[in-house]
Image (cartoon, rainbow over all chains, first blue to last red; front, side, top):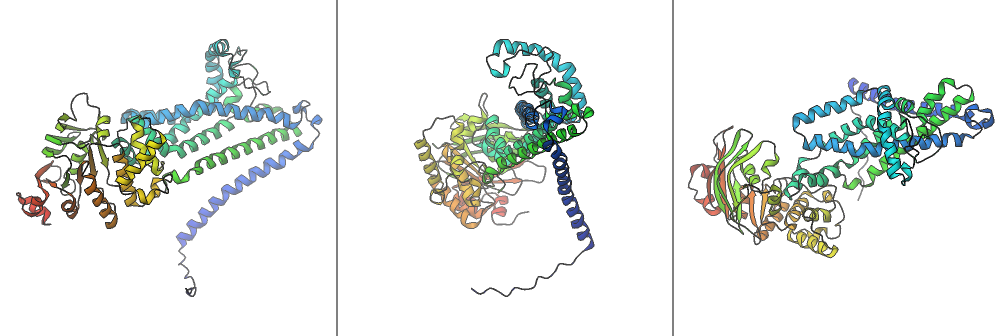
Length: 315
Length: 259
């Protein structure tokens, strides 16, 4: 087979509108990369002194080295966000399914608005509510958990007297991330092709079986993305955690005692006003770790979503 | 396996709108019945009342009787879910579940019936259903691949395999070939010819050649105008409908002179 002689490409006519649009799209696209790079560069450069300085000269570390200082914070951050996610995702999926497939249309719309409204509540308000209302109200439950389920390490106690534990903080976080997860899941569930829903129903599926057969598998990638967005918010949430949690540091799986790990974001917010010199760099270094965790979480989510790409229905 | 359908004076409504009015006909077991008629005349709507898929649409309801071997599908206490397990349906556009493999698609209906099945039983059912849908030889080496990777015609036969895997009494087909090329269409038509030995088949089609090729009896539906209800105009042997119809409208339609 002989290859045809390569013909010279005829350049398309350059229209000013096209060039303007492609130019501005390019700028917008590069800008996001530039901002991300600038943030990363700032965090890395500012973190260097925290690692190079002798730990004994940094007052905030109180004799520990930097890894021992940031470690519990990382644990607290991931642990609180993880519990929040475990609490929020099933509820969010339930609400989203109710809105998309069970509720009468008018009720569904109203409920949708209320959920969106919840997303608009400032985190300070959630913090106030969590610290002043939820914590005292939930404290008796912790005492009960300690007495009846104390054999589970999570509820080993002794139960905190104020109720300002990591579990309370996680509940507040769960309420905060609920709207975003619900909203995205609802949209995804509404996108389920009627064709597939009818296929399931015509096979004699009940409504719940139809949802399991057609809606949930179709929405799987969306559910993961929604959860990751929620997780991102929970990891980075500062005010609510700082106001609710009475942190003592250390690593513990105990959810209801008065010794709780703090989170990176809350710790930065609480310690920053009094920080000076290299102490600031230590806090920024913890911020870098948070940045890395968020990146890692998103990458894992992408991998999960892509793993069964063939079966996603996108082809 | 195969059952007789008897419809008595059936009205179908979407909320207040009367979509199909006064249909009465009897469909014999082990036969193929074709519904023909212009778009919007209610033939698909009527087909969907035969397995209560119609009421999936909010506000939709029916008046009248649909008897399958004497049991009224719309009688009090009849569960639509159970009706649909006895009356299978194939849709206009192939709709295998994209998140399931070919094998899982075939077994989808069976898994709903909560029947515990051994691996070998399931294998057997997958093979016999796919054989029944003339698809086995094409997919036997890739049963664990997604069903959405098949061609349109293969997907439609996969849907037929999925429908017959639950061994229904009746098989409804809503324009099963309208999204397919002529070769795939031929494959489906041959399949219908074979399936008729075991099932009562009702097929909606816009293709009159197809109706005359595959069906034993033909029902012609028509509407007087937009907003008017669709009606059953004539129901007879396919041969009669296409050669000596007794109603002028039928003759106009089958000979291409309508409007």
